[in-house]
Length: 176
Ligand code: FES
Image (cartoon, rainbow, N blue to C red):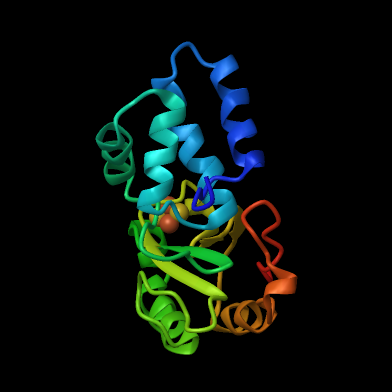
């Protein structure tokens, strides 16, 4: 099928999960992560194809997508995806002003992706690292006790083009 969005590699990875999980339905979330890690979003076509693989209806898979709110569907998130913490410990250590500075410097609003596709940044609730407040997550890397200088360094360190894609497995760009 020429318009298939899942690659053979994605399908193999999902099938490998099917072997390890008690039911196909239980593979829904892992399958969404497999696709999201590679495409940086889960478009509706991928939902349909995942449903076929798991012998579910597209609506059942879409329910999971909608419930978590983590997966973007309209377009890929940035090559670096940042979650800035807005919960109490971080707020008490100046996060509100800090994140205002972050978004102003990045030229985006919370939830948006930069025009060049390098960065998506969003608010998150407590990241479970209050002792490092104010902190943020850049892909899978925790950036601790952030300052405005750290934000400048972080934004300046973002890979400039797609050949330096930071992906979700790599996540080099935390400067602290
Ligand atoms: S409040 Fe920010 S990590 Fe807990």
